[in-house]
Length: 353
Image 1 (cartoon, helix red, strand yellow):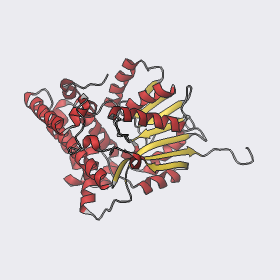
Image 2: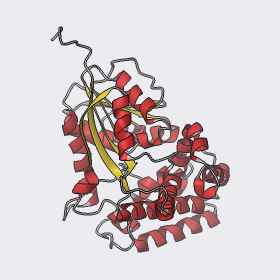
Image 3: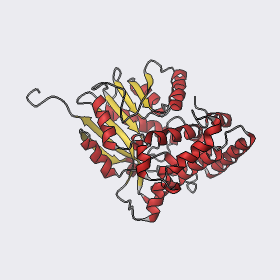
C-alpha cells in the first residue's frame, strides 16, 4: 500500500542516495538547470543522472502527496482525482486493445501504479522498464502486496537502449515518462524495435503547446521551472513530438491534447487558488494549507535529524514544480497529456497480404 505517513516520507527521502549525501545531491541536481546556471545541452548529455538524482530525491514526496500513479489526468465535473487517474489509465489500455495473454511494456514505469492498474483492468501481463533502482525496489514491494507478481514485473534499463530483443512485445505505452529522453526519435525507435510488427504504442507526453513563445520571458521562466521541478532536460513542442514519432517509423493513428477535453483544469490539484478538495488525505496535502503543513513538518524533521539534511530543499523543488506547472497550464503553453496512438508498420508487403 502507499506510504502516506510522515515517517515514511522521511525514511524514503533520498532513495538510494546515502542520507548524508542528500544535500550535495540536491545541489548537484540544481546546477544542471537553467535557473541555477545550467544548460539544456549539458542536461541532455547527463540525462540518466538528471533523472536518477531527481527520482531518488522526490519519489517519497510523490507517493506521500499524490499516490502510486505519478501522473496527471483530465477530469470531469464531480470526479475525484483518484477516479480520473484510474479512468485515464483504463483509457490507454482500451486504446491499445489490451487483453489477457498479451505481453505489454510500460516505458518509464515509476513505482508501477499504472502498471498494476492496467494489469488488473486488462488481465494483460505488464513489464515495467525503469532505470531508477529505488523506484524498482519500491514497485516490487507494491506488486507483491497487490498479489500481482505473476502478471507484473520490473526490468532495470535505459529506454534509450532497452534490454529486450527485437519484436518482443504485443503493445507498449508510456505515461509522462519519455519526456525525460534526451532524444525523442531515439527513444521512440527503441520502442518501435521491441514491438512486434503491426502492434500499437500509446503515450501521454509532456509538451509545450503551439501557444508557447520562447521569446516571451514569462513563458521561458515557466518552462525552466517545470524542467527544474520535474527532472527534465528540455521540453519538446507537440509538433516536435509528433514528428519524432513519425521519424521513428510509426504510423500515427491518433494525436490530440487531452487537456483540451478536461472540464476541470488538469493543474487544479496544484493551484493554490483553486480550492483543492479536503475530502481525502491527498486532497488536503495538495491544498495551500496542506503544503504549508508539509513544509513545516519537513523542516522540523530535518532539524530533529529524522529527515536528512537537504530535505527542505527537496520540498522546495516540489514547490517550484507546482508553480511552473500551474503557470504553464493557466497560460495554455504547456500540456502533460499530449496523447499519441501509433502502430509499428507491418513487415508484410502488399504482395504477401
